[in-house]
Amino acid sequence: MKAFEKNIRKVEPYVPGEQPQRRVIKLNTNENPYPPAPGVRKALQQMDTDRMRLYPDPEAGVLVNALAEYYGVEKDQVFVGVGSDDVLSMCFLTFFNSDRPILFPDITYSFYKVWADLYRIPYECQRLDENFRIVKEDYYKENGGVIFPNPNAPTAIYEDLAFVEDIISHNQDVIVIVDEAYIDFAGKSALELIRKYENLIVVQTFSKARSMAGMRIGYAIGNPALIRHLNDVKYSFNSYTMNQTSLVCGAEAVRDKAYFEEIVQKIVDTREWAKTQFAELGFNCLDSQANFIFVTHPEYDARELFEELKKADIYVRFWGSERIEQYLRVTIGTREEMEALFKFLDGYLKRKGE
Ligand SMILES: *Cc1c(COP(=O)(O)O)cnc(C)c1O
Image 1 (cartoon, helix red, strand yellow):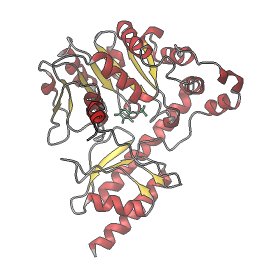
Image 2 (cartoon, helix red, strand yellow; image 1 turned 90 degrees about the vertical axis):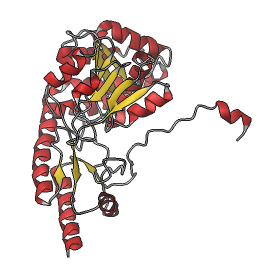
Image 3 (cartoon, protein in one colour; image 1 turned 90 degrees about the horizontal axis):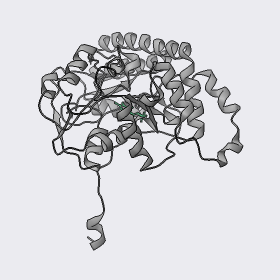
Image 4 (cartoon, protein in one colour; image 1 turned 180 degrees about the vertical axis):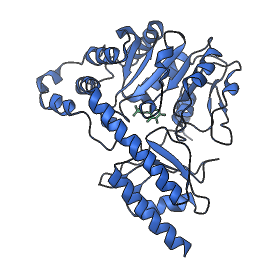
């Protein structure tokens, strides 16, 4: 090892799902199969490219205002960033600064561990129960902060608001972050608790329900003091995280509530139908309330299935890590994409069963 290497910050990075640069049935990264709101296309066509010589609005006003209006909160309660990954990363840096460990589930969004390592934040994973549910009592001990997704990923299990509030109310001396990347496919958001708990931050994204993963837009909503601290960290890092095009397109997408509700409902309908199809083929599905389903088959190996699907140009997500070695995570695509998936699975299981 060269002497200079010992001072290099080394991290084990997060590994995102594959993004094949050709057309496949892509059910591996929880993207939305439908295009963004029609207003986004129009905004993009009318974009004044001369403006690109100028820096964007560092306050991201147009997007912050649209979100504040949509959620009925004040502008100083909204923070935006380059996808919720950027927002969550800023939250870790800003709010998790204790010697006590932060708490999150053992099976969850694997980026949490990466940020904790990167920022040298001590953490302690809390084991999901045998049904892959969060055990809320595990979060009632002393800690340096709490974060969990609701619905959780990759399980897709949603816990109701009373459950979420229980965790928050037992942790009023630390910051609690609820990562609601999939909330629009599920039930009530913890947003209605932000007035009651000034230590609560709710993070959401445009990548899933709003069909804009490629634009990289995420946001956090919380009480103004917390948002101020987040902005202070952001301005100490990069004043212009959001580009002008994303700001304008994001604001357009937020304004079209009817389109948003229509595509979310389509995905929910396809998901409920997909659950019955998986069950018919003998798969066990966790009760998904998101835009993906976590499935396992008692007789067929998940890794092999994952590889066979890939050969057929059907991409799903597989980790092969502890406790979830036999699980696949399948994003809900269009009805046609899902039909192609089930046709392949039906053929595959028949061939293997012979
Ligand atoms: C997809 C996802 C995110 C991040 O999404 P962005 O594209 O960065 O907004 C955050 N948390 C969870 C649980 C996710 O599944």
